[in-house]
Length: 631
Image (cartoon, rainbow, N blue to C red):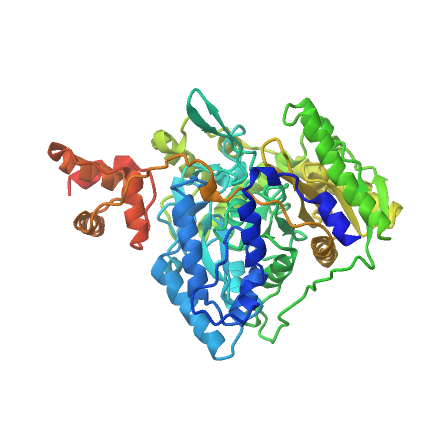
């Protein structure tokens, strides 16, 4: 039965992939356990391998954390800003620091000490999560206003991850200010990081030029999802307001979990709203997600002053004890009306969804189908968006609290951030984001306390008591499941309930993945993880993107890095003059110096030289070059 289900539901995009690719994957799985005495590095593909598999390789002593870090750094160097130019990461920790940390964790493992199941495994953090200056990365929220600012300390969730042995590889790109800058700002775009793109990207030739589509990466935690899907890390942490973690995870064929609001400490994390926001995890495997959520949600002994358990959640690969309600997948009809998919794609998505439902029913799983999901319009109050007054009201307070957690900062308020953007429009307000209307609206927001209180009460009722609670109680459900882009994320956010993402398949049309969104009652994350681990054990593997190097590159001949004397000069000028973390300013200064010789370097190359030599540098702020000339 399981074999039939996995065959029937497998993502139907294999013809686009070379057969050798799948042969390589099958040969690679658990190849490290074959008993081979070869001393060469085991061949694992960062695009495919899970944290669980890496942990098994580490336990079998056929690979080290240093070698794992090197493999991920190579993947990042190839395709983050070069090659496929996915721009999933805003910054990467200095190589020497990553190697030092990985070597220390390898030494601990050799002495028999293991901090947990993810000891020595890489993770990336959304760039709204503060990391101490010792880790060598800024916390920018995607804004140049925070480039060069220094946090007082790590966010609590960062300390939790480090104490359990995870290696912070980098900070992921995001929708700037979690989307509250410009209502038409593309998801996954920030001034500092540029436009993050999905590795499941459609491409076509028109007028002899290769064109790339964004494949709708979705949500403010886009960079975290793309980092995992692209093999830049095996795990990622994002944050979610109203689907901003769940949506990009669905569109990257990942497993993800947004816990109950309030269950994860949010100090040191930029949020839009205290009412809706929380941090959550993403992974390629449900097993990985279980271990990651343990690390994220369990306090350390330093926090409590007492010994705490290493695990809270368990991997359950059977369906016993779950009663699951599936909604009708009508969301995909509205997708077709909006032009996002065609009729064939809609039928394909419906078929995959209903095959999962019918397969579970035939297996004897306790299923209720269909259940009716309340409309998203029920969340409106007097015809107006109820989330908006709450977010605008809480945003200023959340931002002020975030700024106070910096030791050194060049902006101290929302008004100063707005002025900073106006002073640097070529960087902060380019054509893709020409204004900052949302920030202006938040600054001028005068929502009355009674209005905010009424909006909160309405959302709690519409999303909770009269929404999801009604479904749970009427049908005695543990979990509600809906298509990934259905209103379920909004309903759960309104009520503060936990949600999860689960991969289903991928479109033949452009390779874009689609999946499920799940919701359960408060503090029942264990039920969502039960569903995900049982689902992973029952159904086919998640859809894979094409191998990143197997498709035509946007820049197949990237500019080579300069010779050592030029590299030495770049580093010398950077270290002896003030360029305010701007690679553009240094590039302008150098090119002016070299004007008569005809030699010129791009700001991108200068930035890459600086970063690869452990300097904190960013693209932009070129107007600082004038100050450099006078020194």
